[in-house]
Length: 600
Image 1 (cartoon, rainbow, N blue to C red):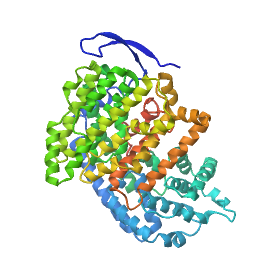
Image 2 (image 1 turned 120 degrees about the horizontal axis):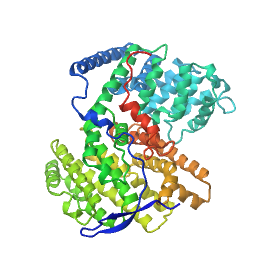
Image 3 (image 1 turned 90 degrees about the vertical axis):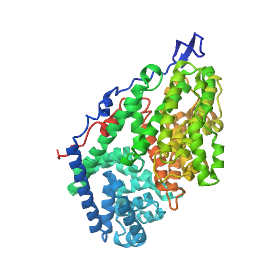
Image 4 (image 1 turned 30 degrees about the vertical axis):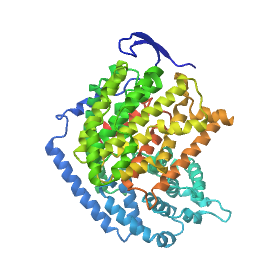
């Protein structure tokens, strides 16, 4: 089916007026409108007295949780269960040091635990220990699960009734790396058994947790969203701890208010740049994009980083729709050249390695003098000029922010990433406008870049603290295996979810069409193979966290979390482009509905 086309009068060159045939994707309008604008007002906030009391209560509860950790130091089963609960309740970021210390001790006594303390048949505790230690970066062997096989090499039939153990093993399977053959066997086994459980044979709460896990494994879920789902489960547990439950609820609601304020300001910025009028062809998804970025980092200390990355992804989304849908090839040539006429090329950064003094001085100099040239947009139509002007204003503001902290070098990397993004979008658009069908081998290197995930990974570091160094940026731009894995997940899941819609409106062939054509297989067989590649990419991500890591873990977490966003948004269709159902529910859960403090 051909793409919907509208003849829209426009002025691709100054002083020229002629009708230009443009494609129009007919994206649905924002489902949120101005809803979050109310949170931009300083009057729409908790009263200071209430907020102060709430924060004091949280601090007191945190002290009690630390005491709980101390009390079970010599009780490994209770310690592991407590750490699991802290993580699932979403309050783990308050206790990272305590968790690190305790898991280090668990790791030291790992062999003794799995071969003695936990008994040979305690599948739940052994799987839980494996998952928590692998998550922490300890490269422990998955061969420990061989003890749950019979003499014929099959998982024992007796495991079928151990629903709690099967669930823990299922969750552990998602931490598998290359070579974990037994976990490759365990995953389909646990899925089959968990899907067939009779709810009448297990507690209602456990049945709900199984259903949730099969839909969304914890390791691939968004941490805040998983906490929002788990807290009600935990509340129904007879053995729940009221301190943990109360802390989780208070912390969720307090952080929700902070995110509401941030979202209110982002919505105000979006409205001020007049997206609905100036870019009516583009997806109006600022709320959904903030959700995306809050998935990358939700913690309170990353407010500046979230603001920067949310605005970058919002501008990139418009740029994508300009290149993919609305812009003509003639306009895109000039547009891409304008974006290219910017700060020094990344190769000049090599000069900044001489000495720290020269690095600071040159970065400061380039940050002030080498800016995008506003005159470069004179030949562009008004909608492109409007986008470019917003881009200039945004990077000027970010430049002022990082210059105050002597981090101007970060802006150079961020700008170069945006330039590269424009180039790859243009390359893809040229393929479409010239009716060129690439081979799969040609397509994938470009398609990995058009995901935007290299640009987002680089820009995600700009607003972070001292944990980020110049080395982190250079590492990302090198042969970065975890970043490539994240791009593969993004590209293939996006293509699987959206290729039918995109082909209807007119788009370069996706990995699905190209694989089907080159291998002569069905769409179903193609998707099965591409999903296998996605799973292999997840193994690469898991391996990147094993000690010793190439960079500090907070940097790796940005890439892992961005991959998790893709898993959540694209597992069942393109829930970003079509954001009116599942994604609306997610946004409501995190940014609209607070958790009730009293039990129902």
